[in-house]
Image (tube, helix red, strand yellow):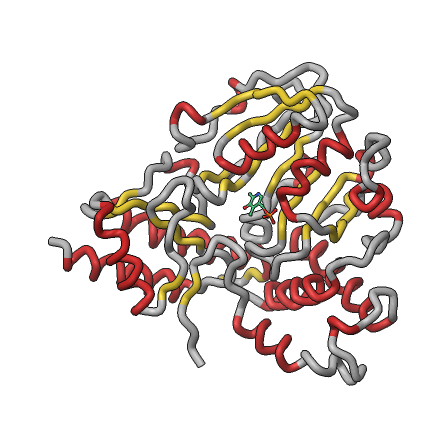
Length: 368
Ligand SMILES: *Cc1c(COP(=O)(O)O)cnc(C)c1O
């Protein structure tokens, strides 16, 4: 069966092979007589699923041994509160606002700490990332928050800032929800990375937090225990019942990722090559087109989320209806910015982007 290509920003497409395997194991996982949803989270069956998911993710993302991998709940939005509860000690936190998601983080943090706007790209309509050399970093910040891929605005950091080189001693916190596992990350520059699973790792319900060990144990007194990173780490992500089925599904995605290869490399390195090629194909078409435009400056464009606008917005509904008829789903842009958006996460193959470009071309030809 070939399914339509699904360009949803999240919850997003999951590889067919993963869904087929999950379906085949639904009633009886590996001869246990139980489906994964029905297992005790502390039983040996689920523990083996959990341990493998942890080990596979550590290998895939090349996470060093001095970082803990926490499987939590609440999504990126809950982390906007959980991070300051764990790290801010009610002090100053620097925020760099490059789009809707970092803006949300900045606003939420005011309930828990003293957020300081170190830089903002709002004046440019979130079409770029202010140069780190110009960030107004505080001397006493508990941490610096950035969103490394702005899912709504389509802006991505292609290099992480080196805070030490900028004169800051604060750890860097990154919201990498929408590009985790799409590329490699330099962990030497990171204190905490968090992201919901539903963009690139699997179904909603699981929140990934990767935290440097030395940052554990600094939570404020009123931080809920289930959200206290040290409590979660000390209990192997089982202080409370973890989202077991989402962990299992993400674990299947990790195995799928490990098996991908491209030009002699595997795993995330293979995905990165594919993602570069996919994004180039789409941006190249948009840039030469008379009908469509992407408004993000070239060096800050996201490989994962590509917003674009029809110059004649009265054609939007016709565009979306035609796309759906061609098996190209969920291309409508976020309601806050309008237009269109193609999210081309790991689960979208090059053929999916080729099908999209060929539709863009055909639709444009009918508009002449
Ligand atoms: C989707 C997303 C979130 C929010 O995730 P929830 O699971 O809805 O809380 C936060 N940050 C970024 C960058 C996202 O893409």
